[in-house]
Image 1 (cartoon, rainbow, N blue to C red):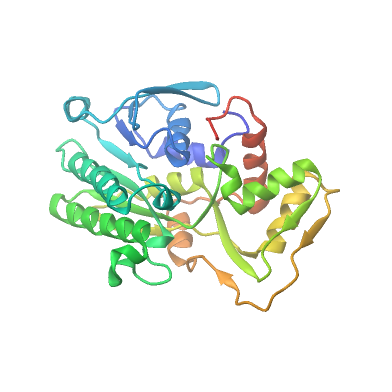
Image 2: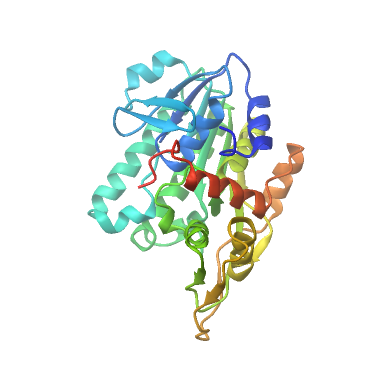
Length: 317
C-alpha cells in the first residue's frame, strides 16, 4: 500500500487491534470502507467485508472479497470490532424516490445495530457526517429537509443507546471534509477536482465566495477513532485539521502536484462565505489521546494524488 496510506495512521490502526480481533466492515466497497480494508490488510486480524453485492475489489496490492449482509454469516463470524461505513450518501437523494432512500438507509442502520448487539462485539466505529448537525441538529427539523443528515443523526442516537445499554465502546466519527487515496467519484469533491485540474495543467476555483474547510485523511480519521475505543460509552469525534480557504487549498495542490500550474478564480459575487467545518476541540483531543500527529494538507494531497494516479486503486467511477 506504499504511497496510498498515511503511514502513521497505519501504525496507529495496527496498534489499536489485537491479533485475536475479528473485524466486521460494512460498506467495504465504498471510499471509507475500502480504506478500512486497506488498513486491515497489514494486520493479522480476520476480516468480514460486507457490501451491497458479492464482488471482488482491488485495493492497492490486495484483493478484497466482499459479500452481502447475511445475518447467519455475521453471527458465526463472531466479530469483536465493527467498522460501520455502509450508507447511501446525499448524492443518492436525487436519484431515487425519497421513501426508498429512507428505507435502504434505515435497513443499513438496523444491520449495524444488530451487529453491535452481538455479545462478542466490544468496539464499534461508525462513520457519521457533519450533515447530522450542520447547519442545525438535523433531528430538530423535518426529515425531508435534510434526509441524509437526519438519518445519520438518528443512527448516532441509536448507537449511543446501544453503547450505554451494553457497556461497549462506540466512537461516532463525523466526517466533514476528507482526503484519501480510495475516493469514489473524485469529480464530486473540490480537493480531488483541483488535483485532477493540476495534473492537466491549471486550477480554476469556481467558488465566487470564500469557502472554508478543515481536511482530514480518511485513514487518520479511522485510526484515531479506533484508538479512542478504550472506554465504555459513546464518543463523538469530528474530523478536523487547520482551517483553510479554498485559495489556500488550491495553492497547496499546485505546490504538491504541479508547481507551474496557474490558479484562477471566479469573480467575487458578494455572496456570503461558505463555512462547513467543525470546531477543532474533539479532533485535537482525540489526537492527543492517541499521541498522534495527523497528516498535514501537503501530505494529504500527496496521498490523494498518488491514489488518483495509481492503476491498482479501487474503482473510482
